[in-house]
Image 1 (cartoon, rainbow, N blue to C red):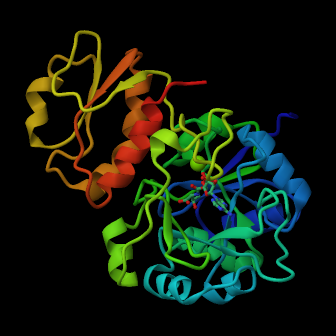
Image 2: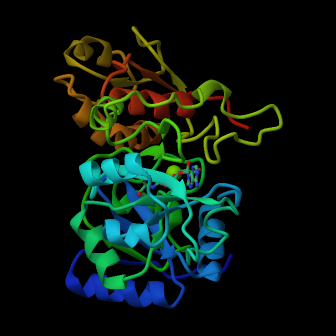
Length: 332
Ligand code: TXA
Ligand code: MG
């Protein structure tokens, strides 16, 4: 891979203009969304998408989400059934991705969808993401702006640390407010299925649908013996810091760092090499927003093990636990 000079620009109309030019030229632009930073490329440009996979070191069987400014732009790319329409009306713009059948003549490059006949679509709410998509006027594929398998990036500094010298531009719009990736729901006829818990809680999605979501493939058995994922991208080991993770920790052992949650953490923190609290008041939304930055910070402490206190498995806690289980999974 040829090293490029990565330019970092604070969010501004000038940055949006530069980003649009860069995307049009087949470049790679990282930009903030409300969930995490995305690494954007023109979804209709196969060459740009090939560069994107290379920059992330992402396996090409793992398809990308096409980001659009609004529902009408999504309807050009995919076919929406009643459930998809309802979810888009309720949660877009926002941290929800819908997997739907591809529309006839969908202009998104086959490389981005890994040759599937479905497509993942999202209309983000973040003003910088929205301004970029509206100004570009074409779909933008954007995986999380981290190297494949690493902890996702929630700040421009995280993006630079992972992808500096590999991408053209980073728009710095401050920390991503939700902090955890979008929830992914497949609407392919039949009951909608939750493929990835994320920034919209399962409970809220089910409430909007008026019916339960079909269960996601379990984190623990979503990769087959051959290592080919059943749902693409649902790899067991992911979001992995360098340190090992010990989940459900009630105590801290000597030499461990602590990822705490809730008010009871102070005492435990005093024995840890380094400690961060996801939310001292036990707020799961605050915890999601802090998750990836705290994991990166504890990893930087040099501890070989990060002890993680239990997180309630409700609301955004389900998405947090999903990411932690993957981060703790054996590395290949
Ligand atoms: O919040 C987010 O969704 C962020 C921001 C940047 O929008 N993006 C993100 O992208 O998390 P990525 O590439 O890290 O994760 C996308 C997931 C992958 O697990 C991929 O396998 C899945 O979406 N996916 C994409 N297209 C799919 C499809 N047609 N069917 C099933 N899963 C799909
Ligand atoms: Mg990712």
